[in-house]
Image (cartoon, rainbow, N blue to C red; front, side, top):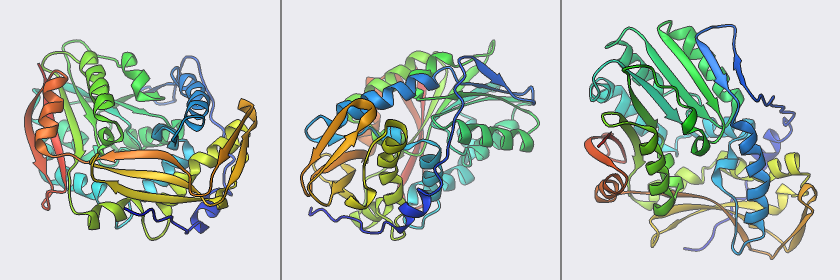
Length: 358
């Protein structure tokens, strides 16, 4: 498929004027005024260190890459929340439709009481539907959101506590691939892990299996995993979801370069890069790239690095793999889970899969 570069950068410039973002890193946990809320920051430093390491490794490799986990600083997290509201971006609406219709059935798959752990929780908007269904079955709930953005996690946690007095929240700030060891398990309580939004699609098959094995290791027999997975479908639906008309996804993609400028003293000129989304049929995935519009050299001063770009050269920033049901069943079997039940939206664009630990 020919590469089409998104030329809409006005959204990018608008957002990048508001980048005075400072996050406080705590070695221990911070206990908020509400005793029902504890937020652990101990894994945040690991993520910050990994950003510099990943930038160096990715921009000195061929082809150039940057891991998608680094999209989600405070601004990137806000941009992704905006993407979820776009008419082209169907996954959020499709998954929310499943929860609206089937939340009671979903949470009935585990006997009460149980707690929930959510990997990549974001604003927790869809999770509210599951929280309400759980609280209809048990008097209280321990919710453990994990997110790379401290500001998003704290704001959403405080909002949830205001809405649900039966809720107790232990938040974990950082990369969830490093944070499952900090999960708190109450005595005689099962856990339901939530991995929603087709975040599993950001990983290759090998990476997805490794991540699911890590989740499986943190759980016990009888615990469950609710996995949101996007399904294969027409390109007329797929591609616009990652290349919207307003250019919000372009801003989201380009923000990783702005983040390098902010945190690593980079010299990327965002006007000289364009957003590109395409479907790789052989791999079964949507790919996002940043395309250099001209031949150029970019300095990343904090790393002592100069990066050469040819005109048309890309930085591969994200994959979003699309699945069919046999592929999902194979993933479960390879990682110690037993598929129990699957729910779909009306158009069968998206699936929510309950797997039990065996």
